[in-house]
Length: 155
Length: 325
Image (cartoon, rainbow over the protein chains, first blue to last red):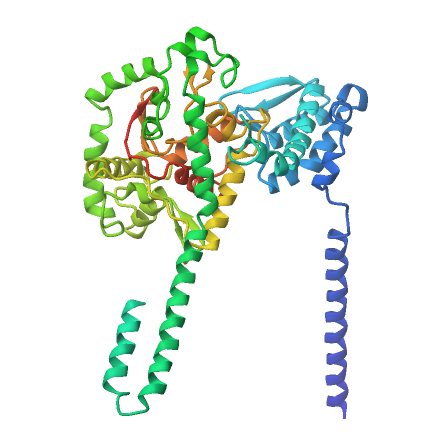
């Protein structure tokens, strides 16, 4: 009788532990994957790059946040910009580092050397590169026909 | 198919003769007709897969011939940024086959310099190295070295395009990358040396570029390559066509840009400025980078499909390894 009671208690403990663990895990992963609005190409297309990517008017951090929002999508679509070996992601990294340090210049690592840019300028470029890559990708879905001899290209 | 019909006729004569001859003859006729219909449908269907590619190729040939037909009197039609003096120096009216020389189809001055170099081609040493590597390691994967013009080819089993560089590197990998990893890459090195030898063998046998599109999947790969070739990209907003279709013959600093037509015939190409050979993948990566975009990896679907499209555009043109600046 006493043995049965012990067994039941053990089962209860195991069940409670398992339930607790499951609840904990669900809470953790649920929190991590809470629905956040993902950037889309359609969102990028609506952006006026000259106005949005202006750090002097909007602030370097706000402009950089736009770059951070859109560049992962540009990478996923395999259209990320790169200049002298410095990808958009490098501009984002260097600009964030400059903002965090309160520095007026951002040090961007290019293929052969590191170049210092005004922080606002680096933020503008990161933002323009991230957004324009997606806008161009969107435009190209239709405009490519215009270059094909025998298709829409006329001469 | 013919074999099947012959076998059926043999069967009819030997085993079915004792039975109801009339009914069996009817059966044989039905089988024969069905077989012929199936054969015709398969043949027609296979040829239909490259129908659009053929249209694209012929339209490109027509455009290139028209563009260079009379550059001396262009008046800004095809060459808005070139002076009349520059355009008079072009070779006038090169024909389709001549575009196998790439830029040298129309760049008379450049061709003179190239002809001097080709008296003693700087890639002769590469051909020798390539022959040794081919005989030792690659022959077991590619039995005939005079087949450079057959690549890239669509692999129906994997559903992907196999470029010559990939085929060579994969073959070397199977043998544990003899001589070390260095050089067995898709962009140049030992891979390019093997290609150099294969190009020479193909030229000796007067082989031409001969790319096949014989399934829906192959057609899809070609179409993807075509779309990417003509799509603008990078912060310069350039497509491959900006330079090599609309821009062919236009000048960037002192260089005349090469035409898509015949562009793949002279690879692996020896670039004098770099002092080494480049495979198609190596050159494509450089072009892709120059548009201001993170270049697609050599061997990626993007790279292989673009090369598949480009190579089809040169179908029927002579393989001819060459030098460039």
